[in-house]
Amino acid sequence: MAGFFGSVLQWFIGIFFSKSAEIAVIGIQASGKTSFVNVIGSGQWSEDVVPTVAFNFRKVRKGNITLKIWDVAGQPKFRSMWERYCNGVDAIVFVVDTADKEKFNSARFELHQLLGQPSLAGVPLLVLGNKSDIEGHASVKELIKELQLDKITDRPVSCYSCSMKNQHNLGVIMQWLSDRGH
Ligand SMILES: Nc1nc2c(ncn2[C@@H]2O[C@H](COP(=O)(O)OP(=O)(O)O)[C@@H](O)[C@H]2O)c(=O)[nH]1
Ligand SMILES: [Mg+2]
Image (cartoon, rainbow, N blue to C red; front, side, top):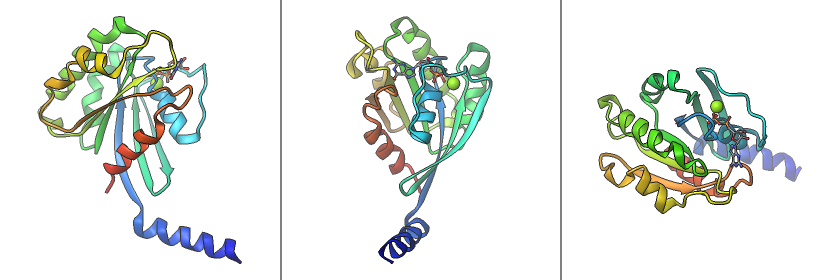
């Protein structure tokens, strides 16, 4: 009986307190965007992720938040599509492989180019410095400097170090996303 009332309560809480947020996950290829979506969606991490072609759409319900996620491909030929998927979202999540420092330059270029689009003015930005499990990865401080995140002043910006492999910092990331919900 207690179980029954518990489920009814959950159901009510779901109806009255649930929030939703639409997010676009972008970044250079192989930074871990699809891994991020898989980990928050099903808790599953895999060494072999099929490179994303164009985009995937996924709806993930976690606690009282439903996330509608555009997981967009990061290969050069797909980067011109980023703006389209970022249009109208509640947050842009930009994923960076912090162990692949040679790609920081292109990450910075693509990020600032995207944020310069007038249609995306003011959209909150979450930068994820992924793969913190790999030795020699860049710290949050280095990432802020390399990506010149301090130059972005027209929107809220947050930057976290994380690892999809060992689920480091997933709690704070989910909290940040949940705060963007409505
Ligand atoms: N060591 C490590 N590898 C990761 C992590 N996240 C993703 N990867 C690996 O990086 C590769 C690219 O990941 P994927 O999610 O396809 O990147 P995407 O192209 O940005 O979608 C895959 O082999 C993943 O297993 C992480 O946190 N740590
Ligand atoms: Mg992908």
